[in-house]
Amino acid sequence: MADKKNRIASLIQKNVTEIIQFELKNPKVGFVTVTDAECNVDNSVARIYVSFMGVPDSPAKLEEIKKAKGFIRSSLAKKMDIYKVPELIFILDDTYERAKHLEETLEKEAKVLAKKVKK
Image (cartoon, rainbow, N blue to C red; front, side):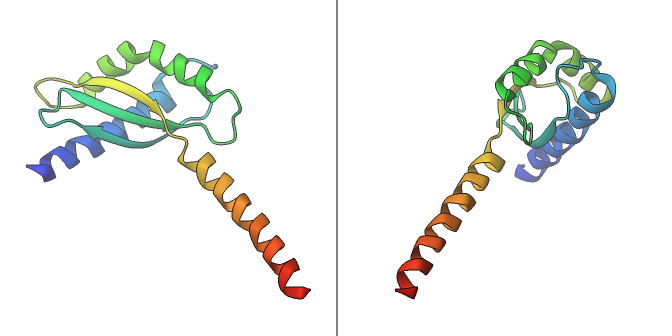
């Protein structure tokens, strides 16, 4: 059962990526990456994680995607062969920014430690 859920989630991720990149005609969205998709137990809700790498106004771009949720869901229904297309919930994935911040912090700490060792 979990395998079917994972297959559906990966198909949703693939299709939503294609819809946003090629069919959504909103220049305010810009370049977006769909990083993950998760479905609940009965596949009635799908959480779609999106990332805008290096863009300072990511929440505004996420709102533009949320406004187009109906179009994305109807396009998804045309592409998928399932009984009921799940409700889409778009979530900002800030993993890249958090990893970058963590890496910068570790580099600073390594420099401080290197200075202490040299003394």
